[in-house]
Image (tube, rainbow over all chains, first blue to last red; front, top):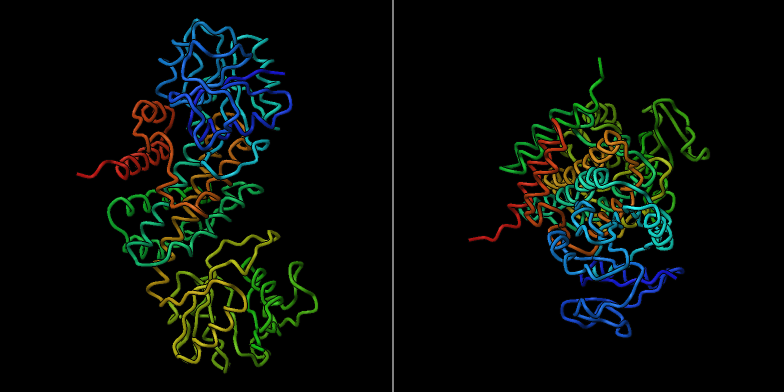
Length: 253
Length: 253
């Protein structure tokens, strides 16, 4: 059994705790949180501490804390013998203090409290400094998910910028649609089904193949009409993205 | 029973044909296609014609054809007594020839051949010129879907521009992520689960509430690092959208 101590209190910590508890080769033995108790979202039977000197002996210390705090927080962990692992997409492994056995397990997913997720399908990106630690993370991550990828910090950073487009920017397109509906006095609910289907399509199709709309067809009449209906930032976004889409589908010389 | 003739051969026609056949108060009596036969995707038992003079007497003639062709095609339909309805989000009802009884049934969804869809959940936006025709479309659309909205052409155009953000532009963000993965030699499959989850979240959350990422946190260190990894159009998109997101979350004075 791989013994794990989980450090953190947010969405990621919550979903990790659930996954750790149902993983076969893993035993979640303790949680650390600043307030030292298991708030509503965590199992009350799980030992919880707010004293880093009180952490139990474990194979893996899993940090699910804010990106900005990873470096400074890890300095407080130098007494630990186990592998200290952060879960961030964008923070280099070496941001963890050099006195530690260091590693990364980055779940490529967006987590929401109270929204169940099939963790076995969440891709886990792993990194470690030694062969033995990498082997430990392979076993650990493999018991949580069917999809484990080994990437170095540089590759993970590249994956993270791609994920910003795939997740953060697509979500902002939904936010723009929502804002426009409010401005136009239309119910945003009309657009929720097409938003779900847009994501479903990409499970089996490549995005360029799935692309539709006026810019895909280079329908300048509609594009001009739409631009005339928009202002400020949304006009800028519409113009930039329509040009980019039209260009992507222009016949190459 | 509402008798319907379906005109068209694309994805929308295919999914409409399926929905029409299972709707209780509707009878699909004929299909028109230019080649005059039911290709692989359509039921071979459905009568099919390529001669507009041969169209059967029906209550509704449902046009699922290219936006650009709606006006000119409708001129060929002046002998019809039934209600002639197009299915486009962006074409005004009055683009249909003035000699016709005119209407619109716009399904707010993205359709793919061979990808099943629960049509009862597809929002249908309807419009007609007379009270009687609107009543007919209410009954017709209500037998296909649980969600029917009455909007005029001007409102539908506003909904359509919102849908371009919700569907076309979000899909292009997936396409950018795919292109970046190719450029960085990373497997795009790692991002497919987060793309599905991004759409799922919006079924129960408002998009701004669901927004995450470096721009949401105003994490300028990561943003600068990401911009340094991008070029050309993707750099422009990253900069514009990150600024917009950061601004949306700035405390208002």
